[in-house]
Image 1 (tube, rainbow, N blue to C red):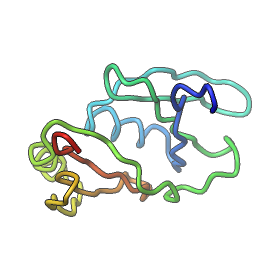
Image 2 (cartoon, rainbow, N blue to C red; image 1 turned 90 degrees about the horizontal axis):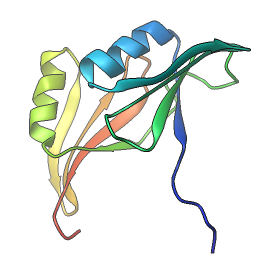
Image 3 (cartoon, helix red, strand yellow; image 1 turned 180 degrees about the vertical axis):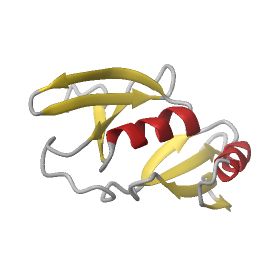
Image 4 (cartoon, one colour; image 1 turned 90 degrees about the vertical axis):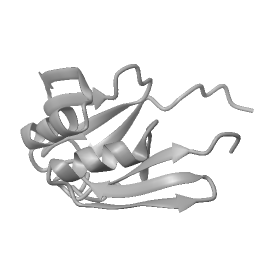
Amino acid sequence: MTTITHASFVTLPVTDQDRALRFYTDVLGFEVRVDREMPPGRWLQVAPAGAQTVFTLSGPGMGTFVPGTAQGIMLVTTDVDADCARLAAAGVEVTGPDELPWGRMAGFRDPDGNGLMLITEKEGR
């Protein structure tokens, strides 16, 4: 048995960190946790308010990550339908939401094509 307690961060490869920052803060409502220059580039992290795991918006020069390759990142929400409506109003293409045995889920992509999912989990799942 390990003593792992949580994931520190998830890397989201992006082509333009400023554009990604606007999407994650203005559209998704995330907060900036870290934004500083450090070799070899800008270290930029965002997260939903109160979240333990953050998202690193990894731009050019910050490793060999390929924008748009992060997929299946699950974001839990209390109201997937309302969030889908807000995303659609902001011009984001949303698939779903669909009713599934474990909850209501929808999918969307960030400006670089990274795939994210929204889920409102069923109670007792």
